[in-house]
Picture 1 (cartoon, rainbow, N blue to C red):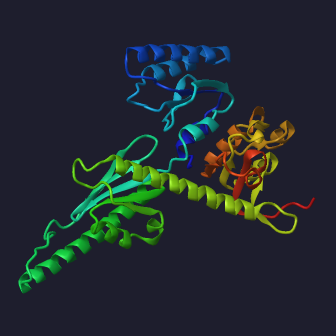
Picture 2: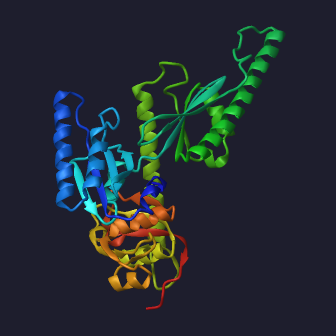
Picture 3: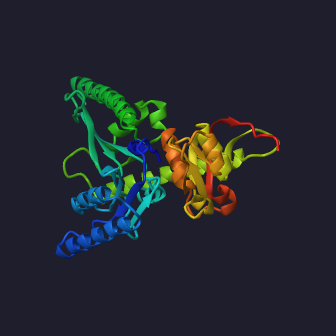
Length: 379
């Protein structure tokens, strides 16, 4: 999961109100539920010491939400009397929660926004393609491309002139496939998508796939369901996209764990993976985290850490934080501190599923794959 969307949270001083909210049902009883939930959330923030202006900003934002805006819920982050970030969830919270803490409470967001990769869907026919970006924020238009409109249809005649015409048709298909592939590759780069799904014409679709750059082709899957024509959307198409997203996540987790197992610290050689709060905190201070690994049930996520004003000012002991330049170190949860550091360093984050074997995951539930090889200090 990329954390670039969290950048608005990085440079603002706390404390922070963090709310995970479910807008409930879209009827009269649902409206009453929302009103009661908002009231209880605001009371919780007030009990924990939140200032009146920030509570009011949270209340106004939640009151303005509807089930249509956030069918699975919304995460709201507020500080200094204003809502700094409001992010749509892809999974409904089991219960609504509100926190008043020195740093934003981010770990629940990883589970509720999910590791759902951003998916670029290309709906293809023989004349062009429409692109749609699928993310936790919902589907959005991501452009289109139009190739040559004629000739695009074959004839059944064996006449020489008709065979010549059919050759021109196939040439048109090939040129259009190349144009679609070029536009799709550009849309993939611009959108920051994690994977691509090709849907549509059974002949043009594989031709586009073959013409994609190797890097894009490696994250592209095809489905026989759906297409560019109006009304071609179907449950089978949605299932195919969801399956592609889940398989992508599974592959990424497995690849990361394979690298982690191979790169764990040993006394014999350098490593490109670390685990445990002290080692991961050191990597965060030195901007070496490439991918932060978290297991939600890990005890280290709740360990105390100390932070200064900067995202890289993290330490296990208060005195270390002072030495790092933090004029007034603050006690926080380890997961919040390290997620903030990872976001500031443009690192990725992977949540390790609970069904992974405990011996094969980072000790304590926290680990990191590093951006460059680390030479362990001698004992």
